[in-house]
Length: 314
Image 1 (cartoon, one colour):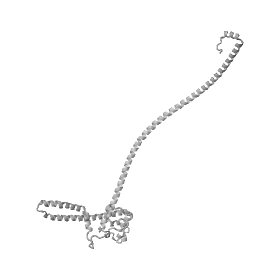
Image 2 (cartoon, one colour):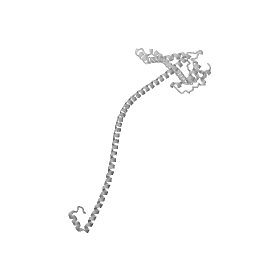
Image 3 (tube, one colour):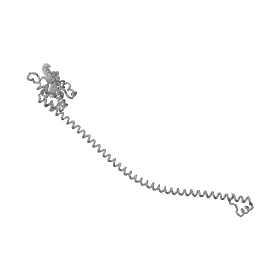
Image 4 (cartoon, one colour):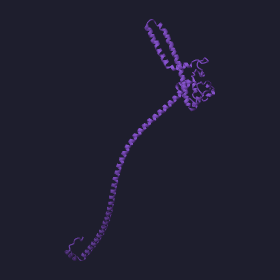
């Protein structure tokens, strides 16, 4: 397989040099995921050119996610080797403890205590490790089987400072399919959750709108009753205003009659004053004439007064 066939495989492969970055799900991957040149000659055989092209062109982020899963599985197998080594150590320790049992003495209690203290905890631990790492151990043992040249594994990526394990094409295809299916399931689950949240929010909004609508209907009915009452009161006020206007017109007519009567009275008063002034002047003239006559003819005035007593000569 030529190296230039992997030019499109540029998503997440650089991370295979440093698997320690993926222990914490390190996500600082460049948008284009450039393929390191020094790994061009050591690309694994299970990556097919068509799949690389398909994933890199359609969804680079998805392919980087798949490479993360593959790298994490490889790191899990490295951990499995370490745990299996620890388990073998405990098995050896148990074997030594078994050799010490005959030397513990002739008493059965001493041998039983030695078995309980040294052997039983390690036996349970070994069983637990075997059960937990059964699948990983089987996969590691299969991939660590000698190759045609007698070496363990194919020795790829040895320049990175550690020895990796090269699984076969079927396993990596299965991993890719599982990763793609997991990604789709995750997206579908997230979409479903978002849809359910939106529906729940819509239900709450609809319920709140219904409550507001019912409250508004009640307020509307109250407002209509108030409007009807105000309309009736307005009609009553309009009738009262019309009556007051009619009374005002009547009072205006009466006021005009009073004004005319007052003008007539004022005219009559002026006439009476003129007539009184004329009479006063006439009377004063008569009194002056009588006084003159009294001075000229005092006997005539005495005779006049005897027959006509003076009433108001002063």
